[in-house]
Length: 335
Image (cartoon, rainbow, N blue to C red; front, side, top):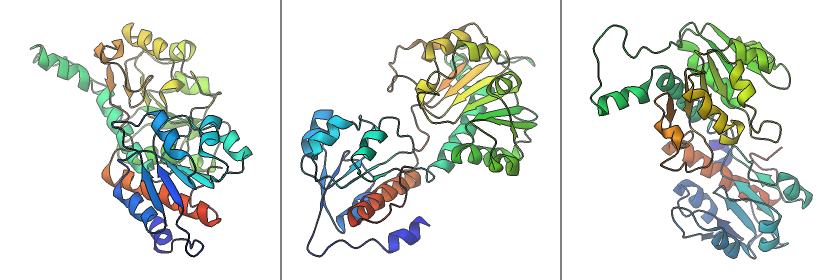
């Protein structure tokens, strides 16, 4: 579908080369190549991240913005860019850093890049399940401290086979996670959300109330967006309802989990372990106590970090921008 759309880029008025700001200079080349066919591209220079001041300074007077970092996209940013701004696309699936209501109030078309990262995030979810369940981090620590033991009951982990997997948020990523787990002989799938979904029934998952899912699941996977409703959804009360043998996986947003409560639960072995691709803050300080726990496996927000996935995200974002400039519906508009 994306390949077809890229073969027939929208037409812009003759002799018009709109000015487009890309807010990170390391955007994959595929996105830049698409934009440069029809636009004059302005790139930030700051590494590893441009400052907000640089982004805002370069945004003045541009026709469109490909918002390629997680700086706050709010009224301030829109005011600085100016009233001539015609469209924006992020290069992400999560848009908790965007004041969507404000962008829509100004009638500025807004795109984002879900779907193309679902496979990569699902892959890393399964990796985190295995790593947290089979005690990868603890095993590495044992080797590093010369505590490797050879006895039948040493460093035993927990199986995915026969387990109950509970998914909080059965959207595109949650569904892909279930597809990836199809060869692991999972015992039962549960999911929770606002209401049952036909996709859940099709995939063989059972809709459950949030508390029921926590109590019954061996693996609890957080795959929902960050909203005011889901912030600190996994708190002390929620963690207390989980089994002492359960494993928490978060591949969504760090603030969905009350991190202090999780730290306490892991320190007290209230749950078996956690596997985290997201946390608060990001980057996580090197001296953060979570990093010292043997039962917490952490990676630095790598869910979509594959060559092909990031290239596809840049392509979708660039296509959104061109379509917004042309005044036609975006390939992937924010609903």
